[in-house]
Picture 1 (tube, protein in one colour):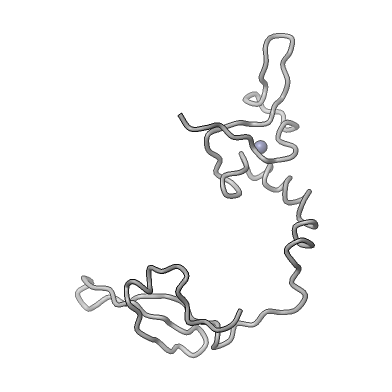
Picture 2 (cartoon, helix red, strand yellow):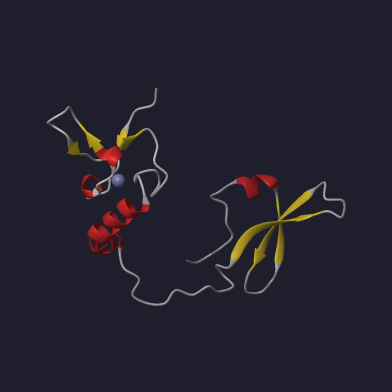
Length: 125
Ligand SMILES: [Zn+2]
């Protein structure tokens, strides 16, 4: 049996749904949801409301901590490479390529390079 984890929504116990009512007769309370798996926010939140509760409460601290975007970022020919593939005419074999979104240039790629999530030829952010 997988371990149960709590929803990380700071107000989860404040959302009054029947499934959150726990406890014995006379001692019932609304409680934070606890499940083996959640589907929101990388598996940390029981629903979108709890995810947004967390975001609304912590977003300023998060932006201050990890750094705010203070100027426009640019997609240039130096960082516009992305992985793609082409099918042969009979749709049996894929050939892997790097394609540049700005220049439309294509460069061949091995399957190993294609599968390597760290592989890139981009040279800037
Ligand atoms: Zn929740």
